[in-house]
Image (cartoon, helix red, strand yellow):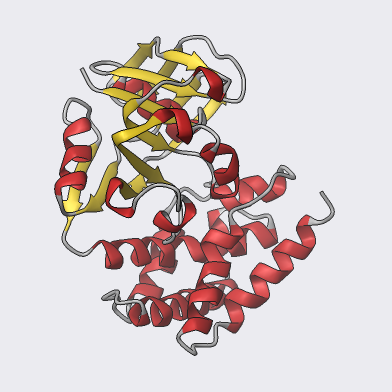
Length: 289
């Protein structure tokens, strides 16, 4: 039985932990104590009773460590690693953005697996999650990626390796970067029906496409129009995490979703004024909290 440690007990961490605990030895590293996990899934309700620890001093070595925290909580997540990571332990970084490996430099790159996840899930209460659909996981090709895919073999989550992870990661970022318009307007997905807002979204995505191509991603020009189209087809009251965090007065992942485009663009001499402007506005507005 594989020993898995999941850092973070939010919607993604809790859902993954519950599924993996059906067949593996799972420990959840959380801020506060939890009871059993319950997830309402498309297959019905599942329950799990993983080990729950709240102090890194009580952590023990695992075969796999899954970091599912928000990107701004990486320092807190890293506090768990000294006792969780053994000489062969692998770290899966399940976070937004394109800088997963860079966030944990203390772990050798060959034992770090960046993960793109599409798993609509919400936490309704501590230890209680609602999983909207089964979702997907994509990881780079190679031995480590294949081992992570095998970890999810007994779950309904479709885990796959991809030969072009760079393109997959930047494509996901192109989708995510446009969500800042919802945060700034405090309007859900329906805001994309406004022609002016839709054009702002296109510019955000086009900037991401330009930088992604410089980083080696194969992104098509039509992706900007598709992102707007996909957003208008979403449930009109759908709220992305950037919007939800900003509205609740929490820290947001604007650095991983927009400012990274600005930073990587500057490295290649590509100006990204729309991402820079909207990210700056959101950061400034967040100071009220």
